[in-house]
Image (tube, rainbow, N blue to C red; front, top):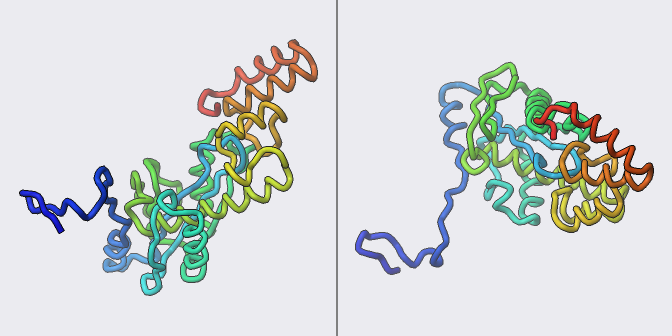
Length: 248
C-alpha cells in the first residue's frame, strides 16, 4: 500500500475512480431505537421512458434479515438486481404500484409518480409509521414522511425499493415487447434510445406510449399526416395546444 504525504491510500482504487459508500440502515435503525416501526423506504422506476408505466415500490426491511449487497439499482448489474430482488421479496414486506401511461398523460409524470408511490405505501401489509422516499417531494400518506434527495444511494430501505421497482418494471416491459414486436421494449425498456426512436418513427406509437412526450407526439402527428393528410395534423396540434405544459 502506498500513501501520499497526507496519509491517504493512493493505490486502493484506479486513478480517476471515486469510491462511493453504499446506502446504510442508519436512519431506519435510529427510528427503531425510538420505538418507531415499521419504517418503509420507497422509490420508483420509469419516469424518463417514452413508453410503459411508472412503477413504484415500498419496502420494509427486516432488521434481522437484510440481504447483503443492497444498493441503488442503477449501480447494480441486471443479474445482481434479479438476485437481490428475489432475496428482498423473501425477507421483507413490500408492495408495488403502477401509474399507467394514461394517468401520466392526464396528470403529468411527477404527479403520476407521487400517486404511485403513495399507493405502494398504502398497499403494504402493515401500515408504516415512517416513510423515506427518494427525491424532493414528500408523499400524501397518513404517517411521517421524509424526502431524501439521492436517497436510493443513501438509505437502505429506499435502495431496496429501487431494486423492486426496477426489476418489476423491466419484467413488465419484456412482456409488453411480446405484444408489440418491433419496438425493442425488451432491450431498452421504453427509453428514448436511437433504436426506439427509429421504431417509433417507422411504426407509430402504441397504446403503451406516453402520448404527450415530445418524440411520441411527433410520431403521432407524422402517422396522422400519412393517414389523413396535413389537415388532420393541424387539428391534432390544435388539440394538444390545450394540454398543460407540465404534461408534455
